[in-house]
Image (cartoon, rainbow, N blue to C red):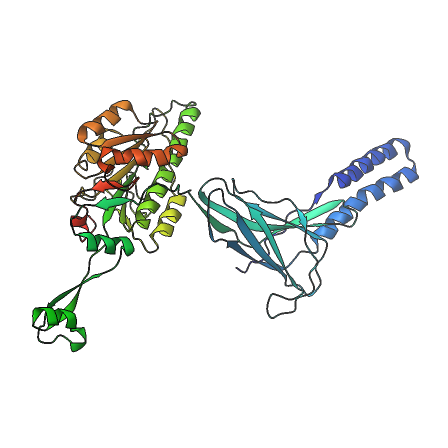
Length: 465
């Protein structure tokens, strides 16, 4: 990334320069009362030196380019990321005596001011000569999000340390910090399609493979597709036929609306908001953990947001939800990264104070899903309308709702009455146990941590609802 020099900051005096200026002012006042010329000489000297130092650091602006890269490009929360900077001098004069300090958005730790190695005059060609220097530092972002890293700040001090001036060079880059995907026990969902041991072995070895079977020869079939062993068994020419089948599908519902959250009174409610924000972070990590687990097991995911879609924003804002914005699907190839990167930018809605005008819900733009897919809902605080729409999905098996401790008990009871299996979750430490609890007695005959889903094999070839 090439960067141009930004406007110079107004030069400022250091503590030493301020002392010079203050003492000079006192000597000047004393001269006004005493009239002694030697005091005037000292006063002028003390006042002129810091002014000259400020002019020195201001009239020599830097001309550099800065490139920025991250290793890795996308980092998981709590893991280390290396920020690599390349600074190149574009001036015809050498550049020395500078300090550098990187800047970043809130929540992104950056190192303090360090000495920038001297740079020779611009040489042209590649940026690996004496006119360029490579800088690196390590940071550990603690929370998921999309953080702005940069610009780089360069500072110059005069030789006596009386004044300094700085420049912001380069453009900021976004560092994507994904939520932590907690490893879950088991091998994911298991289907009960009754396809036989051979087919189950094929699924275990390669979830995405196409199956082969032999059929009778038809005029126009190429001879290279003749299946000779099958031809010998049947006594007629048989050809190989590929049976294409799509991955099994599961649905994840994420509460991004928090419509059941009580409105805080004016001037109050920070504790309640903080509690819901914490619960929302747990729900996001739940989606990451369950989503990665299912994608690794060969499933295709449909992600539904109860609020307006943040994964695929629309030009016209909508209500979102099961009857609003369309679901976003993720597939086994590349789906894990796409899911985690999308979750990095998901944010909860701002609470609306009591008495404030709230916009009415936009008309529904879609239709409720009709195909009963295995469904997992991560709920923070839904309202009655969301609960009613979720009740229509209770026919799916499994229909598991991971409910945070911010949910209203009456809403949880209504979900249970509709046929949902409600699993309480309080913190991210509860995620593995909650996944095992979601299996319940129906997973007794399956692998540890797996959830038996009768009929999943029957919807493997279905399109996304």
